[in-house]
Image 1 (cartoon, rainbow, N blue to C red):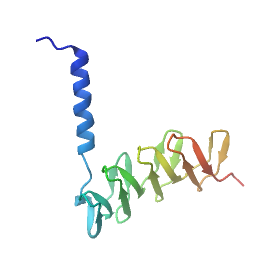
Image 2 (cartoon, rainbow, N blue to C red):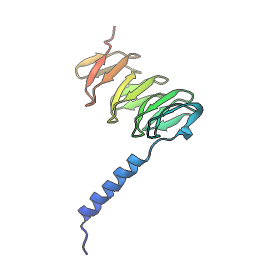
Image 3 (cartoon, rainbow, N blue to C red):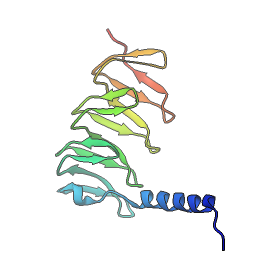
Image 4 (cartoon, rainbow, N blue to C red):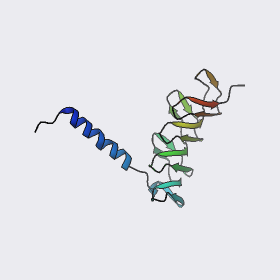
Length: 140
């Protein structure tokens, strides 16, 4: 039986996709007590017991974190600056994501020009699911 490299690559991609979907966050990252779950038992929200990196974001110890039912990060308070393309989100502020994993909102750490608009530092920025600018505050 001859198996083509395209078949092997396609099969590998399916396995990789399944591994990512199955790798959900569990309550071991949470402080005991304030933990909530979705009806199916997946972690919904909790207070983090340590600084933890979730989806590339360093989320702050003793701060709340929220998750989608798929196990991906919905929001947390950063313990460091978070870079998302040209956007730098400020440390110690809430960052949130759309269900598709793209940035939803954060507090900018520096001024930014995006989609023809100037956005002020230390103010909120909000993006649509496609990554386009929804809103931000203009510099004074």
